[in-house]
Image (tube, rainbow, N blue to C red; front, top):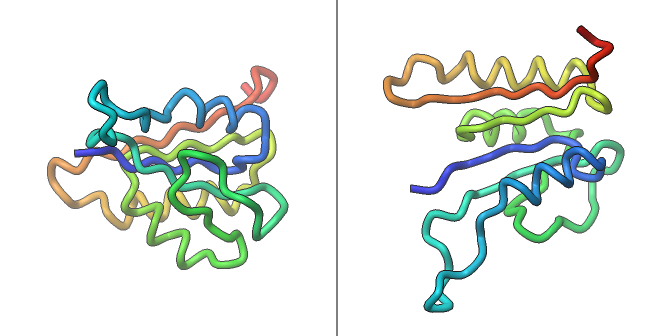
Length: 119
């Protein structure tokens, strides 16, 4: 079963590099689609609509937080770049994790990326 991943701010350098690293949607040796390819969702830092990068299934609008909560709660891995993020975005991710924490065997991971100076 493929993993579902959310990456915020896909138009920043850090998030672009994360997307390139986490994508595994290359075809098999037979030329068929990889059945274990990650399903990746994302958002943009400033814009509500832009072209979605290759490998991203759905781009979420910041102006629709309820829709973002739905996708965040379905993801196995949530990655936030705090260099250019907003505290409300992280709070939304934590709320989504809290909402679905009771399901057994449903491990979810939240990764927050910050600068060394933040610590």
